[in-house]
Figure 1 (cartoon, rainbow, N blue to C red):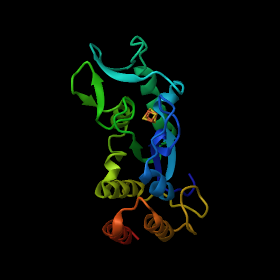
Figure 2 (figure 1 turned 90 degrees about the vertical axis):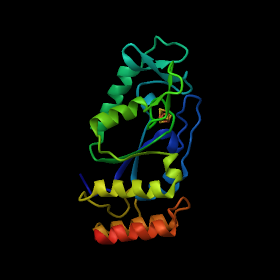
Figure 3 (figure 1 turned 45 degrees about the vertical axis):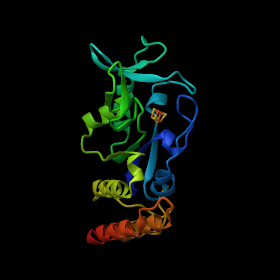
Length: 219
Ligand code: SF4
């Protein structure tokens, strides 16, 4: 593996890609204005990964005698559970260096915890993709776009991703997602601070100070 910035998986619709069931996207300002300059981003749309088209009929989590299943709303006999689990495992195998994941809230595939469960009034659960991620990589930092609305959550998530990146190799000049010259740890830290300082979806002066302190203690 060459020199690389931390690798972050992102629900594709949060990157502005029109992959939702109705052809829309849900671009996330922290992802596009901040993370894009700090991390290498890899999009994942679990529903597209199992061959569902755009547009497509909605799917939902349903409590059944066999546990939670991911079924078509209009054609409940179409069960996507096994295919989506396999796609999730494939994604993790293909990206062993993943340092974190930003996912879409309320999605039956991507949600952290708040996907509605049909047939169980008021009950929510993680989306199926996230269920697999947690089972396979229980220590992977995860956040959804609603969590990123809090500067504190945003900063903590960034620090956990950077912590996980830890001793991994650092970026070289011109690599996707990272600006700044050189390949030493100091250059990575400068690039991070520059990116955070320039970001419109930034973490504020206090957050920048905490990030700076964190980086300095690891320089
Ligand atoms: S929430 Fe997940 S499955 Fe749904 S469109 Fe976005 S990336 Fe695809």
